[in-house]
Amino acid sequence: MQRGADGRNMRYDSLADFLRDGKAALAKGPVAMIFIEDLVEAESTIRHHMTLKFTSIVVFAPPELALPQDMAKAIHRVQFSMLQAHALETAVNAVIDAAPGIWMYYCFNAEYLFYPFCENRSVAEMLTFHTEERRDAVLTYVIDLYAADLDANPDAVCVEDAYLDKSGYYALARPDENSHPKERQLDFFGGLRWRFEEHIAKPRRKIDRIALFRAKKGLRLRFDHTFTDEEYNTYSCPWHHNITAAICSFRTAKALKTNAGSMFEITNFRWHNSVPFQWQSQQLLDLGLMEPGQWF
Image (cartoon, rainbow, N blue to C red; front, side, top):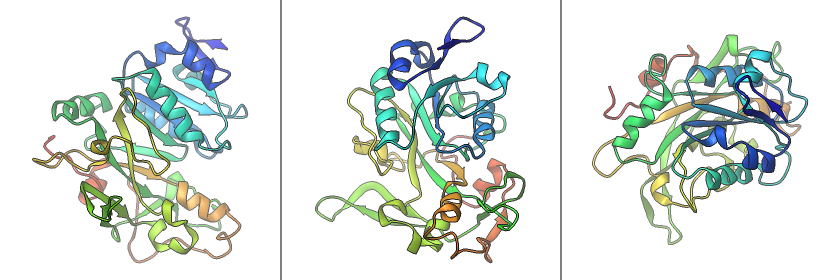
């Protein structure tokens, strides 16, 4: 276990150690949880979320991840393996239990959160407004990013030359156990998971994720990125539209180009609806990939 300059514990040998000794990281939100599945763009992922001014950033990572000293001092690091069964849900639900009432966020490495006006407004400002709207969760769309040149970038990851799909997104009614549409809930599709759906398991084809949420007692994250409280899974309140956000992610592209069943079948991700990613929230707003709701 290591301590930061202020004497706080900043590095933990296990999830149990963090839950016991890392209470300072969960004292005030919003808290970002970043899960490191491999080492690809781990540093850029952490640095991007640092710019959004989360109160705490908790990185769940294997021991082989090396970080610059300034970054290591700014985060809480938990030794954690994403190879174990239900790793994500286990960790997120444990943190929920440890910090009810706190706003939280989760993502994986090579994923980058964008919300309306994020270049000059902190994530705390956005969530304060969202809370005033009596909302406890923010719907986020996972927007696939992919490298322009797969020969130069065989894992399909290149932050300097990233592309996304400008169209091809759609939504379907989300059925309940009786096959009736759930109120204010939709399943969203598009991007690489739609274009290359033959390589994606059906339960993994959706691009919606409730990545920003306020923890509460008894709340549980499920394997499909929805929560046990159905109101958390809604795209808006009953009376008007709410803020939505986007997680721009190389994760699907990386999986398609590193999994044996698909890597040799795909030579190029670009098509006629591909456009360069500008790394700006305004582009995502202009493409309709997130919206500000009543926040201006």
